[in-house]
Amino acid sequence: MKLLKVIMLVSALFGLLQSPARAVMVEDLYTVELPVADQTTGLRLESFSEAFKQVIVKVSGSDDALRSPAFERPIENSARYVKQFRYLNREPEAGKKEVYDVSRLILRIDFDQQLIEGLLREQNFPVWGRERPSTLLVISYDVNENIRLVSDDATPDLVDELDRAASMLAVPVLFPLMDLEDIAMVNIGDIASRQYENINTMAKRYQPNALLVGRIVGRSGAGWQGDWEAQFAEQVFNWTFKAPSRQAVIDQLVRNLAKVLAQEYAPEDHLLVEQSLLLSVSDLEGIDKLIKVRQYLTSLNVV
Image (cartoon, rainbow, N blue to C red; front, top):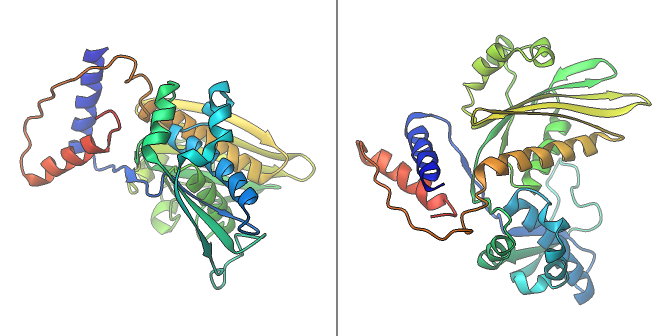
C-alpha cells in the first residue's frame, strides 16, 4: 500500500510538471449562502442544518455521509460546526433573473474546516481538498429534435443552470466556446456517435483535467433524459438518467460527476494506518517547477 501511494504521488508530480492541464483552487469550500425570510433564531438554526448538509456533500464529494446514522446527531447539532455567520442584503444584478425568489436577505455561514474534516475522517468518509480537477462539458441539447451544442452563445440559460449546480457541489466546469475554431473540429454528430478523435482535438484547446461528453434530450409528454460519458485519469464512466424535468437531469449529472471525481481525487483510507513518508523529488530545473511541486503538495489533505 505504501509503495502504491508513492507511485501515485510521483506520477501526479510528473504529470504536474509535464502536462499543461491545471486543476482549479476552489474558494469558499466551507461557506454557504442561503436566502432567508427573516433573522429569527428558529429559521437560522434550520438554515444551519441545510448549510451543514451542503458543506458535507461539497467536502466529501457525495451525499453518502448524510445517509449514515453517524451523521444524524451532527445534522441536529449543526450549530457547533459553525465558525461564524452574518446576514447580507443583496440587490439583484441589473439585467439578470432574480436568483433568490423568496427574499434578498442572505444568511452567510462559515463552517469550521477542522471540525468538518475531522468528522468525515472519524467516520471514514473521504475529504476532498480545495484543489479540484476542471471538467470540460461537451453537451448536445435536443428538445423535440431541435438540437444545439451547449455554449454561452447558443444556450445561455442552460449554461447558467449547469454552472449553478456545479458551484453548489464545488465542481469546476468549463464550456467550449463553440466559435469558428471549435465548430471546425466538432459537430453535433460527433457527440452522438462519440467521435473522440475530433472531441479530444477540440478539448486540447481548453486543457481540462477531465472530459464529459453527453446529451440532454427532452420530448413533449415523455420527460427528459441525460446520457453521459466521463473520462479522466485513464478511466471511463458511463451512465444515463431519466427525470420529469430538465433541472433534475442537470442536478443528477453534477452529483454523479462529483462522486466519480471524488473517488479518484479525495483520499479515503489515509487515516486507517498512520504513517510518514520521505519523498525526494529530483530534476527541478528552475524556480517555477519548484513552486508548482510545493503548491501541489500543500494542496493535498494527506500532507
